[in-house]
Image (cartoon, rainbow, N blue to C red; front, side):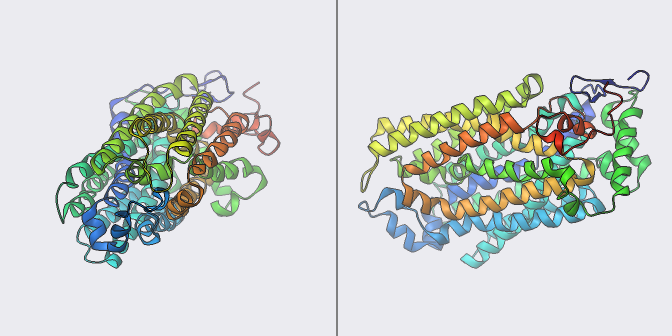
Length: 507
């Protein structure tokens, strides 16, 4: 398109350019720091659940059970009360996400992130002071509401603020901070496990630190242009866009597209959740459901929750199990960084293909080793236990390279503005709901299926990789408000999405 301030890229969508500027880097990194609370909680939950001082206070019966060497090692930690400690957070996280999705259009992405961080901060303090199981669960509920609010708003914030050609890298900063939070949590667990009686309180209470970082970061940043326009603040929206794109940059074309998208939203007064059920939004609804379902069926969620317990099961001591979880955290960070560099250069599909193949191989190999060398009343020989640790590390890095980064990137960037809050809210709420189910059921699954649990996840890895390669469009470098191009030209989704907005310009 000549003279319009932008060019059409290979996908038939406008390319606004978008050089990296200090304001956009700082703004997006401050927003992405919200991922710290996700990662910290995942790491802390598994580590604290393995501390004897914590088990002695809240789960004394389970502590006695784990000391019986004759018990089936697969069932050693199968206790529903213990898993409720972990899973209660995710049940309330689902509620928090749905509530945030309803109010974010009225108060903005920034306010939702501030509220989420504040609730997480309160929950961490309640957990640190917990005198009984009920108080512990109440604290977990507050943490869950905080995660729900921040998880709904942060990826969308990053997608709306980042330049199109760098969007994948900026959104991947969120899972990167999740991985950093997970690593920090396991380092803290490694240290506090040596503090008798109250080490677990320190682990849980220090969750207030990443929560405070998130609140401070959210307070200091501006809201997104799309969110400001939705609330009628056009002058503020244009100023926010100019600030992050850089002084002297022509933002007319990009701002015009934001206005057009919001105006389209207002012409269709139907609620976002009702609208996303319509036929023309079918691809977005499918993605909102498929991504969290497949994310949980990789098996990585439960591995992250219970990695110290899993390593104890295969024969590591307490300290070695926590150190193994720390190594996993480092592998996660490496995978996320590699993914952030690669996705905007080589595209999203390559990451799905490589990650899926490696994760499948690791799950099958772990099933083979566990099935041969781990049985009733016995622990795995050290050499094979180390092999499982290596496979788990490769699996973790492969996950971070693919689904770990892309789960936040693709759902955060594909939705039209009129269903963006509903699409992201559905994806995050469903993910947290499935986290709850898996956290509550994984130890029972491990007890029942034994090494077959690895084969269960391997099967689903084949299914999800095929889905990604066939049905997830390539979105590299496509501006947010032009995603309709990609879906309209897809071999399958084109029967649902009609490319009206840019239909004449792409020819």
